[in-house]
Amino acid sequence: LLFEQGVFGHKADFNDTVLRVPLIVYGKGASREDKLVDLILTPSSVHALLDIKPAKEHHPGDFFSTSKDYVASEAAHDDKGVYLMGHKLERPTTRTRSLRTKKFKIVATEGRPPLLFNLQKDPCEKHNIARSEPETLMVMTELLKTHISNQKKHRSMVNKREKIRRIKDSMRSHKSIS
Image (cartoon, rainbow, N blue to C red; front, side, top):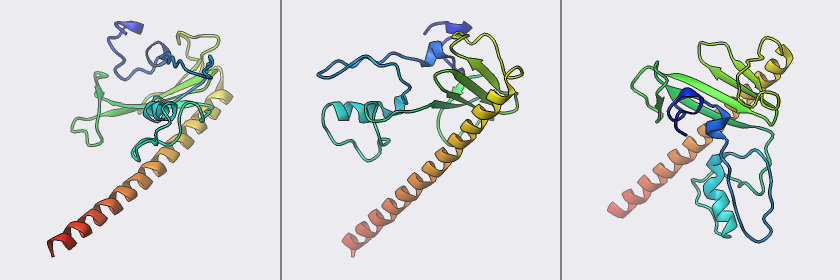
């Protein structure tokens, strides 16, 4: 992925030439499919292939039993576009979010107008159609907002579970000390 779309790596860019990675799985009953999947499901998918129960911290679902109408990406980056990781970032950051269906992709960066691409007509994402397709932009924006809201709910639920686990661990260690 050297210098695809004029950049080294993907920084905070969500171009398909960087993110759309072929995944080849060979095995009994495997068939060729072209579908949208979240790469975060890779560990659970490998476990499903091996018929192993996935770890609790893995996202639920796998490539084989999950069908999606869209996939989403999110990155935090500094003013130079350098991708940053972690929840507690010390430098000033901007978030960029992307949501892709089989036909369209929206890229929304804080403080900038959203970009909209028709991936079937413009697979290299050279022509922003946000102004010429206001209805599609509205639908994709709402889908992205719904995804963000669902992610916040999921993170909240995971944080609550983690807090409960820590309290239980603390109670167990306190009992063992007494």
